[in-house]
Every structure is written in C-alpha cells, then in structure tokens.
Amino acid sequence: MERNPFVLAPYACKELFCDRKEEMSNILQYLRNGRNITLISPRRLGKTGLIYRVFDEIKTSGAEFDAIYVDISATQSIDDFIKVFAQAVVATLNHRSRIAAFFSALGGLRPLLSYNAISGSPELTLTYRGEEEKPTTLGNILSFLESGKKPVVVAIDEFQQIREYEGVNMEAVLRSHIQKLINVRFIFCGSKKHVMTDMFSSARSPFYDSTTTIPLHKLDVDTYAGFIEEKFLQYGKTIDSDTVRFIINWSKDHTFYTQTLCNETFMISKRQVSMEDVVTAINRILTANREHFLEIRRLLTAQQWALLRAIAREGAVAHPTASAFLRKYGLSSGASALKSLNALVEKELVLVSNTVDGPVYTVYNVFLSRFLEILL
Ligand SMILES: Nc1ncnc2c1ncn2[C@@H]1O[C@H](COP(=O)(O)OP(=O)(O)O)[C@@H](O)[C@H]1O
Ligand SMILES: [Mg+2]
Image (cartoon, rainbow, N blue to C red; front, side, top):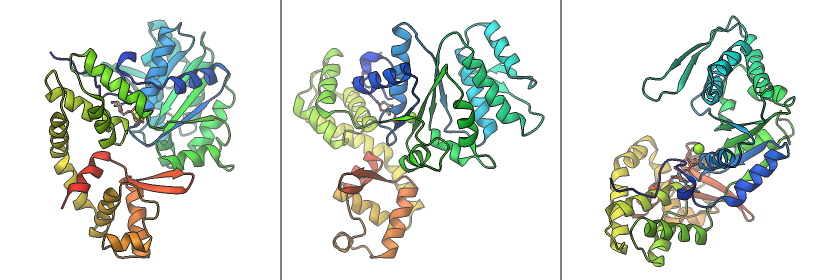
C-alpha cells in the first residue's frame, strides 16, 4: 500500500507532525512548574494533535508524568463525565492490581468493567446510590491519581462542554477538588473561545485566574511550507514551492484543511506534482462535500445563507452589518442582518477572531468558504 504522509488523524507520529515546538516546550515547562494550562483555538487547528504530541514527548523522554487524555465532547452530565474520566484512567493502568486498587478507591460503586469488542477500549458501568455520591466519586478518582508514584497530567479536551450539564455547577465541583491537588496537573482544552474565556478570565467563574493560557495560532507559513515540501520529497514526489504556497493559501493555512488538500494532492499525483494536480484535488474535495454544503443551505434561512456567501466572497469581514457591505451583496440591512450574523456565529458557521482592530468574521469551514466563493 502506498503511504501518504499527510495524516488526517490528530496525531500519528512526531515525523508527520509539523512544528509546534514552542507551544510544546512551553506546555512542558509549565507542567513541570506545577501550573495548570488552558489551550484555546478554533476547531481543527491542532489542539488535540498538540496534546498527543506533548504526551508522546513525555513518553519518549523518560516518562516524567503519567498522562491521561479525556475527550468530553460527547458528555451531557456529571455521570457521563465521571464515566469517561474513569475509563480514561483505567486505559492507562497497565496492571490488574492497579485496576483493582482503582476500583477499591471508587468506593461502594461496584464498577463493572468490560472491553469494547471493536475498539478494545475499556467500558465502565457505575451504579450510584444517590446524587451526592457523584462529586464524592470524582474526588475519589482524583485522590487515586494524587496518590500515584508519578505526577500525573490530565488533558480534558472540549472542556467547554461542562457548561452544558444540567442541574450541577460542574466548574465549582471540579475546582473544589482540583484546588487541593499537588501531584495532578491539568490541560483544559477548548474551541469555543467566548465560553473558555468566560470560564478562565471572568472574576465570577470558579476557575478564574487558576490556569496559564496558551493560545494556539495557525502554523507559521514558511515552516509549514518547508514541512509539506519535505514530506512530498521523503515519500517519493517532488513539488515546487509555488505550488505548496498555493495549497496553503487556498486552504487558508487552517491545518485540517491544508492537510486534507495535501493528502488528496499526494493521492492523485504522480512523481512530479503539478498545479493541475492541486486543482483536480480541490475539485474532488469540493465535489465530495457538495451534498453536505447544500444540506447546510436547507437548514438556513435565505438571508443567513446570503450573508454567509457574502462573507465567503469577502474572505474576511470586519463590519458585516455595515451598510456598504450589505448593499454590495444586496442584503437587507439593520437588525435582521445582525440577527442572521448571530445565528451563523451560534451555529459555528461563522468564526469571530479578535484582532487588534476588533473582531473579524470569516466562514469557519474553509472548504465551505471556497465552495461559496464559486457558487452561483
Ligand atoms: N502540527 C500538525 N502537523 C500536521 N497536521 C496537523 C497538525 N496539527 C493538526 N494537524 C491536522 O489537523 C487536523 C485537526 O487537528 P486537531 O488536533 O484535531 O484540531 P483541534 O483539536 O484543534 O480541533 C488533524 O486531524 C491533523 O490532520
Ligand atoms: Mg480536538
């Protein structure tokens, strides 16, 4: 099988992961100095990949920490949180006796362990006798980690999800436990900037000022271009630097989209990659996404779709409700434009980026943005 160096999973190995050296060394340094970290960026830029990269580095350079990764994006309640957290802990325990110790630390819950037939990952069933047992269980899991031989790093991915839990102030519950830990460090990772900022920088939130924030930006264009050229070469193909620049530019240097275009281009090209190959790859990607994009159109109002298309055509818009912009694209003005804009932001179809000159609006999904540019 021909191998493709442009992986679409968050992380495969160090060699196929571009840069992030500075972020990685900052994270490791903070962890070593007892800090908890908040990692924030828009979706699909590389937060999860970076966590795996950091964990890989920890593992291959002496394993100074035990590392636990928990993805809470699918959780809806404190029960779900405890379940995925406990499962993530079990997955890192490599001896039956440790698992037994963990279960006894869980107290009277009589946890039931099974393994998923397909993925092989551990699945836990926990039975509570009352609501009040839940925060205690969480405390027990953390105490277990606190008493381990090595310091522990827990990365909680899509952390903003805890705001969706009903009937519990999950931030307060977590904060009260986490505050006491000495041996356990946290990386809180999230893509909803306004929620994450409110959680960690607002004086009325339990986690206020308790972490060091690492913003994750787009990859440096020159570094990324060098990486792409090198990987094509290492895997038996040549590509000139103008073509690489075109790829990064078209995919707006948004990692997932750049990687996808590289993967597609690599797949369809012969030994010498041409501009035509890239254009073919782009057409294939847009065609593959077409139905999905038209589905989005059906879910929006005509006005929302028109505004989205206008933002795509501008590339980036600083004042999407300004009359000059609205007139240019034949959009109705005033309050209804603002309402549409808010709906698009809420649906994560439009991304708001804060710049020194104020907010700038772009279409979140780069492929959708390019699709809208050429849609009649
Ligand atoms: N440093 C990197 N080098 C190469 N590819 C990367 C890098 N960071 C991210 N990617 C690619 O981008 C995709 C999205 O990254 P991911 O870590 O899942 O983003 P996030 O967690 O911020 O949503 C990954 O699936 C991977 O293909
Ligand atoms: Mg992620």
